Length: 375
Ligand SMILES: NC(=O)C1=CN([C@@H]2O[C@H](COP(=O)(O)OP(=O)(O)OC[C@H]3O[C@@H](n4cnc5c(N)ncnc54)[C@H](O)[C@@H]3O)[C@@H](O)[C@H]2O)C=CC1
Ligand SMILES: CC(=O)C(=O)O
Image 1 (cartoon, rainbow, N blue to C red):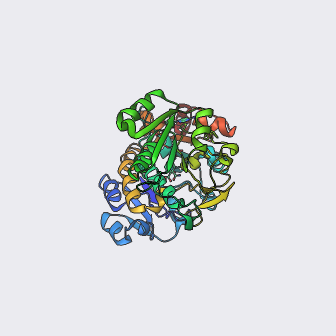
Image 2: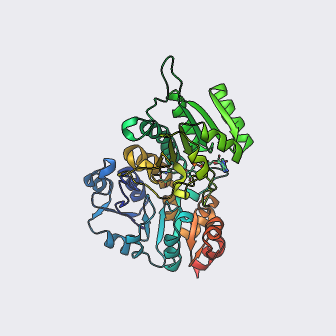
Image 3: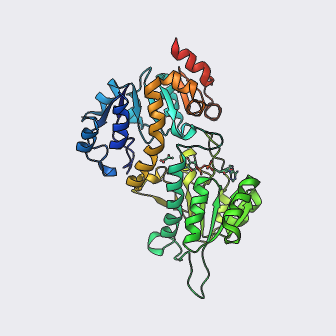
């Protein structure tokens, strides 16, 4: 299979979909890889290293999109890339379609076979989302601590406090991978941490892990309202796979926070859980202030630590890419249910039920769509 890796064009997105080690794995299996010139530089990988690993370097992204069988990316294509879509193209990347209706429509219209990293599912885990959630969760606590500093717009508190002065309060909503990692780092910074989830089993696991160092709480509107009002930093970490995130923190709750408090809505890539997060922010302009609360809503947080993130991401994506390349997309997805769950669009329809229902688009099961591809 001929596989192309364009340079990421989202603001401050320095990750790349393949390392030289990834290229070597695919080339040794008999495939060809084209990397866009300088695509790996932000992650510290030079073109020459890709060439040594067996890749071809191409300066023109159009040429890459036009001739390859499969495009591998990190972030969802931006509108300037929609024109490259064509029937039969395989796209393997993060998509977050529930929050990207125009992208979903373009993929459907052009009959792209699009597999989203974030919905590949093994049992109850999302193996291609997990490493980036680990990164973003850890970053969320660090970022929150940073924006609580006065020169950054915050109220001017140190999360750990000091002897004789209270610690800061952090509430994490969602106790999955992002939430657990955010809580771990917030506790490490010395904060007083509360974590909320809908799953009693998950709350039990967190209690077993952290004991009385953490407050676990059932996620319901009353508990959220009380915890938010009492917090210096709130971190949004909820996910309903494939679906638009529910707005759990209302504008009234935000108004109840102390001036100079901070919210970090990590779930923004699925639309966000905080009602007053009305825009996606960028690494260049990461925050805005509303009701005196600093809002952070960057949808590609791991892009700021690309060396760590690219290696962590490709460690998990490449084995799946290899299956697609070795077997072809129909057979690979038919034989591997985890990959089949990753299919979001194919044969001119949306193939992930939560995305279709959130966006009001036609739904076709992945099986039906894969059969249609064969015809
Ligand atoms: N902004 C960024 O750069 C990044 C964003 N993310 C996003 O962060 C979000 C969370 O991802 P993960 O932690 O990996 O997901 P996860 O599936 O590991 O955890 C989500 C948790 O939310 C809980 N939940 C569901 N409904 C809830 C509710 N009403 N109240 C409280 N908890 C609820 C679930 O029980 C689960 O424990 C996703 O949208 C993911 O795409 C992940 C990485 C980077
Ligand atoms: C998960 C995701 O969207 C990211 O790592 O940017």
